[in-house]
Length: 245
Ligand code: MLT
Image (cartoon, rainbow, N blue to C red; front, side, top):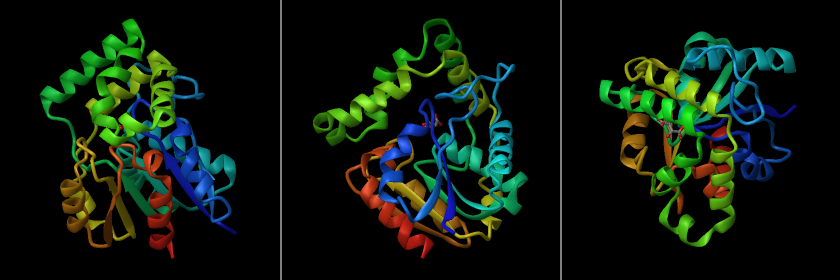
C-alpha cells in the first residue's frame, strides 16, 4: 500500500499546483490533493476568518472520510502554516512532514494589518489584482520569461479563486501563531525544500530552519521560485523519493 501524501496548497492557489508533482510520483504515493476551505473547488465556510487551525481540522476530517489513518503532510507556504497546526492537534496522523517554501513564524503587526487590507480589497474587487502584484515574488525570473504554461497556470489559480475564500484565509494567516520554538522539539522526519530563487522563503532561511529541527534535511530546488513543486516537479519528486526511502 502506497504511503498517503497529503499535499496542501499555498495562498491564493488551489490543488492544481500539485498536479505536475502528482504525475511524477504516480504509483509511488497515494496522492491526496485537497482544495482548502473556500479555495479552488471547496466551498467557503460561514466565517470571515479561516484560521490555520480550522483548515488543519478540515484536513483531519478529510483523512477520516478517506479512511486514511496516517500520512506524510506536504505543505507549501500557507500549506506549511496549516501543517504546524496539524502537527500540534493531529500528531497521531503523521509519519513525516515536507515543508516547501514556507516558514514557522507569524506576521508582524504591520504585516498582519497589510494582509487584512488585502482581504478587504480582494472581497471588494476579486483576487485578480494579486496575480500581477505577486508574480515577481512567486515565480522565478526564468519561469516568468520562458515558461508561458506555468505563468498561465499561476494566473488561472489566482484569478479563479473565490474572493470570500481568499479573504478568509488571508485573515487567518494574519492571526497565525509562531511555531519557531515548538518545531525545535518535533521528532518526526522532516524534508524542507525551497526554490533557489524564492524571495519570500529564501533558501538561507529555509536551511536555517532545518538546522533548528532535530530530524530535518534541507534541499534547494533548481530554477524555481516560491512555487518549487510547480516550477520544478522533477527535482521536487526526486527529493521526496530520496527523503522517504
Ligand atoms: C503562500 O504562498 O501561501 C503565501 O506566500 C503565504 C504568505 O503570504 O505568507
